[in-house]
Length: 336
Image (cartoon, rainbow, N blue to C red; front, side, top):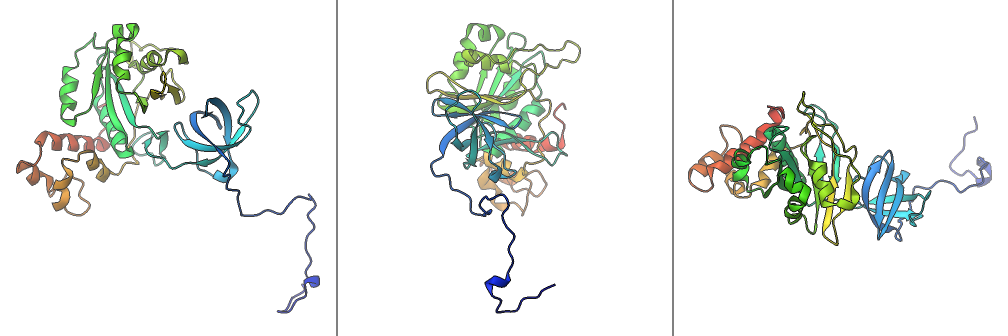
């Protein structure tokens, strides 16, 4: 093997010819300063449907983004063919910083978190009052995920013609969550959609709920021109609904009234990714009382300073109970 000294002449160095005749690779990537802004509407097997101005554009993720994935609601930068015509494909080169993220895991032992939707302002938790029966543990878990991800919760109760909402309202009254109660008849004549829409104007709202609660029926009523899903029926034996939504989809409300994101029905809502210490941020009236807590306090242990602080009359005891009920959802299954 030939060894080169300190003063090697350039002619002594042999270089491999570039047989392909193309330019050598570089680590410098283009900035794509002229990229167009868009919003991801849905994702299907590596293809992302985006809204660019008033055009619906099909795109794929650029290789330079690596493992970073775009989800429904993401604001992205696109280059390439942005005409939106058939058989054209644009390229997503940048995913903008997110203002909020709704995440879930398959179960509490699953380390892999799934981002359901990005940049949503609020989370509409849809639950039936009967057929199927309400699952408070699942509702609690959705609330924890909403608070952790920076979304404002909205409780939507359906099928009030089958059961009254009083018991459920009593359970969540101390959380000061806005709510809407609807019946099947109101869904059919449009009254329910009008009352729900009052909470949606100008916002991006993700709808979540387990199968059979009427979530997709409600979304169809809110966005009648986008009846992309066929509604399902509840299994009379298991009491569970049949999945009718298979992928998240963002749908525009009439005018500039905001967006509705329809998500697949869930049977579980894992919280393996949630840091319990962040849940307290959803209770601003209790935050001052945590100053005397020991380090890394879970706010659900004997030495928690909140007990004495609430006992002194600084906050409603029902609020502390609600906080600890939500914190306990990580140690209990949704169906309990």
